[in-house]
Length: 335
Ligand code: 5GP
Ligand code: MN
Image (tube, rainbow, N blue to C red; front, side, top):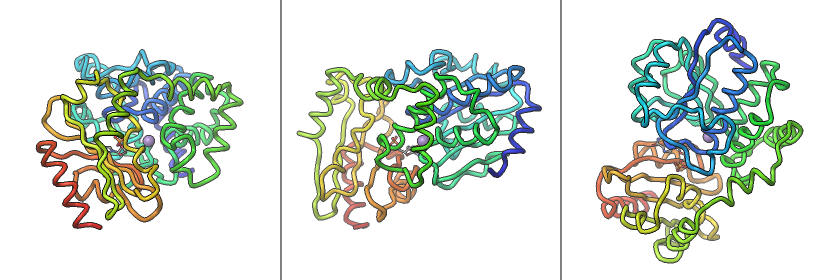
């Protein structure tokens, strides 16, 4: 693997490092970060290491080993900033540009420690000293696993780390149904099972751990809120804050909702438009199926965002109604 010797050197010389991932950390962000953290502590006991996320991860990921030791920047900026001060190395996992750290971005841009990017999104920014970027990786968790293998550290992966990697692998691939373009993720899954992963238990923790309200919100979205546009092979769901509040919305509750409309045979593009908690913008999630429509391009062009070919996100600054009209205009213009 390219860069692996450079990485080894950086690790040998570093005294204190921080592992960070993107805002609203998902299964891959949390899994990759915690597995890398676990590996670092096993392989480099002299190296001080911590993990920080801009904000909290959803509850269904809270059981992953080490999750309770992550510094949450939004909750305690001082602690994170003070730790960062002493860092001479920063790992940036599962995002391609520092602005994906949102509130935590400035703390990083204003810091001189070299940054190592490990990521599988398109178009990495020019903000990193060492770049591991590969869009053929199913997930950053797969990337982390392969880097650990390249460093010769497989035996240092604990069962907890293997579980974390498995979470990243299944959540970023819809349990191997997309983003898997090589046989490697399956080999990795087999290895992780050998390291002690109980796949049924993890699937249950990740997929069968939601509240009744969350299920009813999903029902409401699909029954009442989903708008389908057969002419454009598109569908979207728009959710206002008051609607979310009505269903006792918790962070992570709408995770995966955007995928459901794609189960309709004639829908190839799906969007979820959600009013942010402070109502200052609309969070946009985009999904496509097949190899024709790049929602990464769509997110970049219209929503100042990005992501992958089939999964991307961005923001719209304005009201929910305006966002819906804007999205419908995009459908007319693009398709
Ligand atoms: P989600 O819709 O699940 O929030 O995000 C889908 C994918 O798009 C993820 O891989 C995520 O990293 C990426 N993504 C989501 N929001 C943004 C954004 O605002 N900017 C960029 N560059 N990528 C995003
Ligand atoms: Mn990812």
